[in-house]
Length: 356
Ligand SMILES: *Cc1c(COP(=O)(O)O)cnc(C)c1O
Image (cartoon, rainbow, N blue to C red; front, side, top):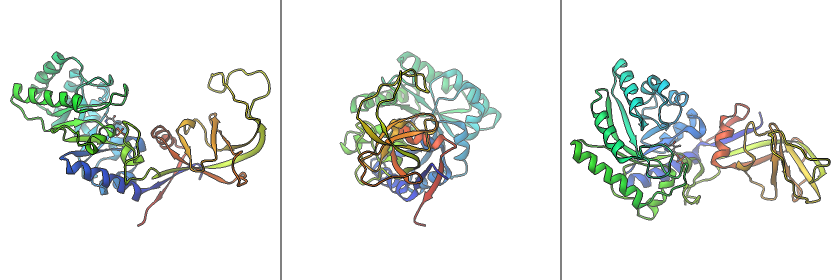
């Protein structure tokens, strides 16, 4: 069935092994983030073979798939108050910033006869989740310490997600300062200092990871072999563990400019076109319901993506020597956004490749 994603489990395992062992050598534990592939079980197993210490996802439906894998499970997105009970049921530790939600987790944990761990998130300037105000931070800590079924497992931060703020010795240094102040002021031990995502990995190469950061949450680097601060490939990893294969349904020579008065496209935008004369245009059986055209990187570099509507992807085949025809296939590498969307679409099937 096409379109399909071909998934090389061995490459994912090797990426994971390469990056995890570097983290371990620096005293850092790794949570393998599974959301980009919807916690798909064979890929989760590849992470585990690659040596991750924990599994982490942002959605309750995915957390359910991470049960019984033998590793602690983390809930990454701040829990919705309405899902507190399921978060306690399906994760061991969740990332939090709202005391009222933490109180609901405490109640659910009491009901389920459990202790639920939390990592208190601090916003160091990226302006997505986390407590920004210092006074609120300390107040929240004191309130958490009164809850019997909650364990304050640590503090964490998230960078380079919304604001694109780069992790540095300086902003991570601030996280470590908070750890020291909290431990001293409340006489407790914070065992996890969770310093962000794939964008923090470059600090390991530059020997700039501040001492004290002892956990990272990594997704993109494992699946695409890329650190996400500068978008560089990570040496010795694969960027083609996932390949999207699509089938051509039409090939015709047509002008590059539509003919007639231009109104709105299928998505309500007024399109702008560049006149390149007559082109060889191919149409593939995939569309915006399954991918973002910007998230596709064609393996045949002579082919350019022209655009897409809900069910059709248009490509420019003008520069190809080979005469593509309907029934032929095109292969694409994917960006993070491209992979996320293709994996979430139920119209894209999966084929697993592995040596064994
Ligand atoms: C998605 C997510 C990550 C993983 O980010 P990558 O860039 O894929 O490594 C880490 N932490 C949180 C809170 C996330 O939501």
